[in-house]
Image (cartoon, rainbow, N blue to C red; front, side, top):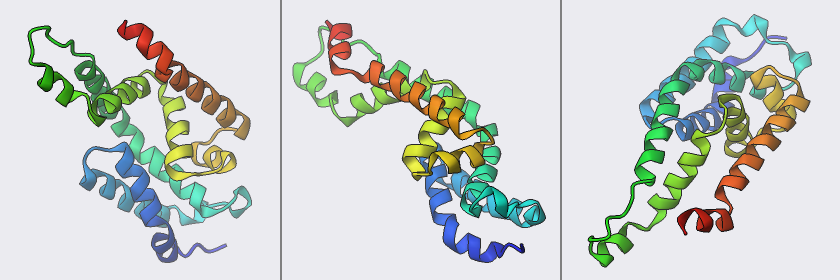
Length: 175
């Protein structure tokens, strides 16, 4: 089967770029990786196997492989957010100033800290599921693992996130 890569670009560039932008701070880097995904798809178009499913999962697989070299930088950034979120409040600070900092940034810091604790393979499956809405089977194709492994990694990641973000647990840590 001959792939129509220009048509694939039209249909799938935005979802891939969107997924990458959620994974990258730098928008231009995400766009470069998305473009490189289709360049590689064009170069490797004869390797596509339609028996393995829709080209969408294949394209996400290419994007993931291109993005993996950026993962260490991303992980370091999440750890830095976690350190910033855990900064203690000085008892001598003005109450209004303290309250002013308790906003979305605080919960984003807690989420970043939680995501930073996930194993890279669990983080990848979690973000593919919830940021791109790929099915378990599509994630399996994209990452190159069995669908059962996708389900177990997703379950492990969700369990870890729920445990760390449980409000009762957060209150116990603050108290």
